[in-house]
Structure formats: structure tokens, C-alpha cells
Amino acid sequence: MNSRTGTIVGIFLVVLTITAGTMPLAGAASQKITFKGGYTRAVMKEGRESILLTQGAVVQVGDILFEAETIELSGKDSRYLTGTENVRIADSGRGLTIEATNLTYDRELEIILIDGWVDILDLENEVIASGAYLSYDQALGIMKLQIAAKLLHHTESGAMVCRADSITYNRSNMTLALKGNSSIYWKGDVYEASSIIVDLKTEEIQMEGSIKGTVHG
Image (cartoon, rainbow, N blue to C red):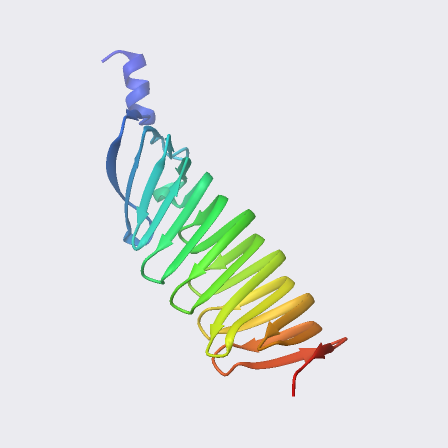
């Protein structure tokens, strides 16, 4: 073995080019990762691990399916996942679908970040939401939407339409916290306040700050 070959073996650098292929990986928290793409490039040098999927990428992590034009897995045990263009996340275990233009996912902390427009469909809790920024802590079940945030919840009395600069949606206990230019349209009534707390299970609404509204008696 010459010195050049020995150096290559010593640093353990592998570059793979896979066309329309599928490959499973063992990941953080013992989750199996399955991925495929029209073109795949993988670098497995310690400290620089990355897998780049392009031309229509698909990654399956547990119950979560990630789709995008481009997806990159990076870090030790493929901890980080980033996606760009036509991003779609389908979480069958939680009844969630998220569509966006980009995403960053930390598999170890179970946090999804989306800096751009995002649409959310929560079939489990009959919720549709949107905004221009999303932070989602999967472990706690807490979503924070910012910038033109909007959330619709189906009730027996019709859709409850919530808008605010920021909406924190707790999927675990079914509550909403609206802050900044907060408003709710429900059953023909209008509620506006600086901040509003909503219990989606009991349909109780609490308002604070400058309050105004219109109700039909």
C-alpha cells in the first residue's frame, strides 16, 4: 500500500454517487433512516458526515416522511436534516402534514424550524394553520407560528378563526396563546385584544389588554 492510499484509508473518506437509489442508515436515538433521490452524494469522513439528495429527495425517519427538491443529512448519525423547495412533511404517527419552502430538523432535539411561508394540516385535532415562520417542538407538541399567523379550528358551531402576530399552539393540551393584534372570529362574533388565550377543548376564550369585540345576544 503506497502512502497516498494509506492516507485515504486513514481519513476514511467515502464519496458515493447513487442514481434513483435507496439506502438505509442507523441514526440518532436508534432510528432507521431510509432515503432516495435522483442524485445522491455522500461524504462519510468523521466530523464532516453529509448526504446530499437532489432531483426529488425522499427521507423516511420513523413515522415521518420528508420530501423536497433537495435534502441534506449532516452531522454525526445524520442528526440534522435540511430541505429546500417544495418541502412536504407527513407525520403519520401524529396526523400532521406540513408544507413549506424550506426546513431545518434537529433529530436529537426533535425540533423543526421553517423560516418562510408554511401551511399546516392537523387532522388529529381538526386544525389548519399558516404563517411565515414555524418553530415546532415535537417532544412537547408545541408549535409557534409568527408573522401573519392564522389558525382555524373546527367546532360544532363552525370554524373558529384565530389571527395574531404570533400564535403558540400546544397540541398536547389543545390550547392557543395569541399575541399582538390578536383576533378571533367565531359563531358570528368578533373578539379583539392584545393577547388571547383559547382552550380548544372547552372553547373558553380569555382576553387581556386593550379589548373590543362584537357579540350577538
